[in-house]
Image (spheres, helix red, strand yellow):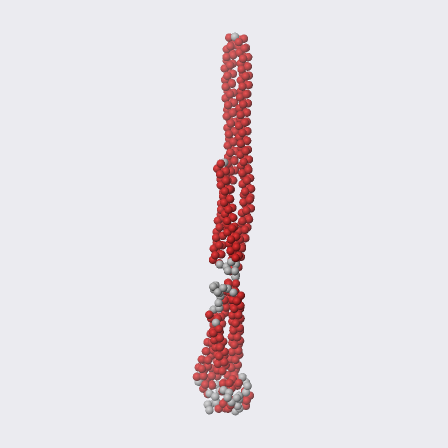
Length: 423
């Protein structure tokens, strides 16, 4: 029992130490919360992650210690119950042994009395033969002695019974006192366990709340304005790269169209001027439509790029970070020179292509029209017709454009037929 008391005392000391450790942990968590609240505008992710990991490790160790102390308490409770049961069993065995010894003593006493009675009967028979009077006196004396012995034996038995009863009473009283002490200790331990269980449940609730709070703060940091700006910057870079690729593709297509126009002029296969003008008019209309559509696309891309740049500048103005910190800046390929180069190149290419009467390179009629014009050239009749149209200082190319647009097609039809030979 002394060992059990020592263990219970050790368990109580351990629980007190555990409470001190819980209080220290709570103070650390409060410090972390204060530091996090004071540095909400400038979060330091590394320090916050380190604090979170330390808190989680301390929480895990505390939970392990709580579980160990619970297991130790369960073992002590079971040991105390087994000790009480063992003591009760020992008391029953002692009582049973005492009863067996008492019964054996009674048997021996009865056997002794029987032998003495047999001996006295033999002596009495011998004296009855020698002297009947002395024999009668001896019988009376023997009867008195037997009665006295019976009383003495009864007194001894009563004394023994009294001693036995007192011993049993003392053992029962001691056992009851011990049982009361054990019950009181068990009751105290149950109250202590109940209080500790309430404290542990409250601490677990607080720990869960702290863990949830830390997760929410991590989520807020992950979704902060800085992260959103980085994502917007990446999206802007991707869109600008796509615009530049589209610009390069359009420029390459325009260059191919110009190159093919020059090549087609050098080919020898040509159509009649009238058919060439008719087809050239159709191709020019298609080319103008295509150029207008691509010009709309370019303008739309320019507007989108301008809007993205404006949004980025507004976001950067809202941040207002110190100069010592790195802020998000627009990429180098977002600068104005490249964009102006892009717009100027596309505009000049549009005018050049419009003046060169370029059509789709994939159209098979284009090769035929250019080949006929290159082979036969422009006849005298065609030149006379061009002189009657437009201004005197107007170039031949602009007059051909007007002809393709149908501005003086009726006048051209009223002139004499254009010969297919060169003048």
